[in-house]
Image (cartoon, rainbow, N blue to C red; front, side, top):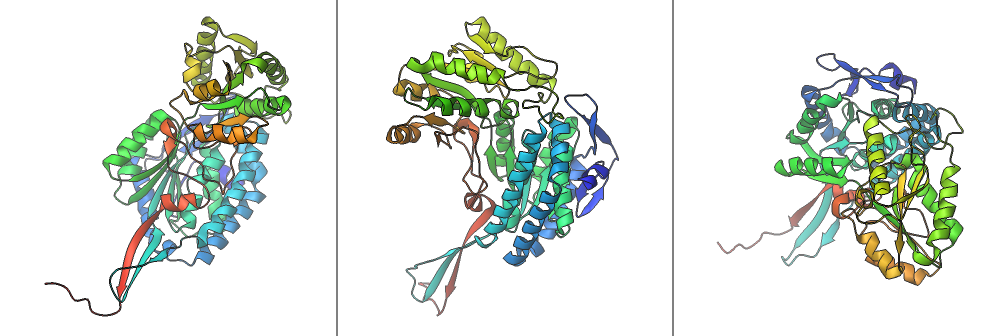
Amino acid sequence: MPSAIIRDERLFINGEWTAALDARTYDKKNPYTGEIAAKVAAGKREDARRAIEAAAAAFHAWSTAAPAVRRRLLLKAADVMESHQADIARIIATETGGTFGWGMFNAIYTIGLLREAAAQTYSVIGEIIPSDLPDTTAMAMRQAAGVVVGIAPWNAPLILGMRAIAAPLAYGNTVVLKASEESPGTHLAIASTFEEAGFPKGVVNVITNAPADAADVVDELIAHPKTRRVSFTGSTKIGKLIAEKAGKHLKRVVLELGGKAPMIVLADADMEAAVSAANFGAFMNQGQICMSTERIVVEKSIADLFVLKLAAKAKALKVGDPANPETQIGCMINPAAMERVEALVADAVGKGAKVLSGGKAQGPCYPPTVLFGVTPAMRIYHEESFGPAKSVIIANDAEDAVRIANDTAYGLSSAVFTRDITKALHIAERLEFGICHINGATVHDEPQMPFGGMKDSGYGRFGGRAGLEEFTELRWITIRRSPTPYPI
């Protein structure tokens, strides 16, 4: 998207491309080549304040606009995104080290997300509730909440950036998106999309910042008295800080945080289907997805065969330059991510796990790594790797598999493979995760589905009508058609 590249040293506030107040910028580097991927404005607290105030000023007109107006503009934004999807995919690959295919998936999904948001514009409905007072009509009504702040991560930057703001816009809120320091150009492309679609000034605002200024910017975005909702996707560690800060200011927050997704494979499972799902769920986007399959819990009788098939499939994946169309596994987002994965693998191997594929870095890339015989004594059993190093854990039977799957602080996505659907449903009911896919990979989402986690994976839901409860206010209004006789 040329406009995102030309204007990437600017913030998007009140419909204008503007420099940070102190005119400072910072360079985001390509994690594979080390070259500059984007030069962006280094916004600070004062810039965040400007964005919130612009959104607040635009709120009344946008929230009272006809649903048809909001729907038309959201559909136009989807069309704009569709026309620029290849350009945006290249920006994603350049900034994050993900493959071009992953960038295209982001774009395609986001187009659907915008169209689903357009479909939601008429869903802001209420109800008539019977009242015990005579001659009285009581109504429960939903209305837009106000200014919604979206704080989005880099790993699926277009999807998660747009998810933070599309549904709130559909319901009549105005938004401020704080771009990730690792994918600022991608998030500025979101601003360009809404600008080209013709959204009114101030309805959508996007700010970028240098990493050192992130805490101050976030503090302003949450603490500002005109902010009414906060939508955050990211790590559990940061999510807890966001929730604590939001609670201090009595701001409602939707949190989608870390995961340690288990995939249970029972003895009667379709072996090939399970291996394919595990390979995709574990290694897509270098395992840097909140739903990534982190623990593959396999029933003992088939574990040896399963792990050999999975290791063979993992070894066949093509690792390397994200810009190469044939590359299936790109590079890690930064050296810290690489160091974390290396430390987890070293710890597991030191405590008896076997490396059946991968296990050693290849420059900025880490190849798909299958660890067999992982136990609770190993860090990788408990900690989210957020990389392409995955555990295979042996379970004695289905009951043991459920115990192992639930043995985590996280609770986002899960999966179970078996030909016995009745058994699978019983297991799904007992798994402590917001999402469970039967005979499907842990990595799966659709714009209209209620997406979210339990336990340390956060609270609240995105997607479809579930977002209506998160981003609107429910109000009680009564109409009395005749005078009420009061006792005093």
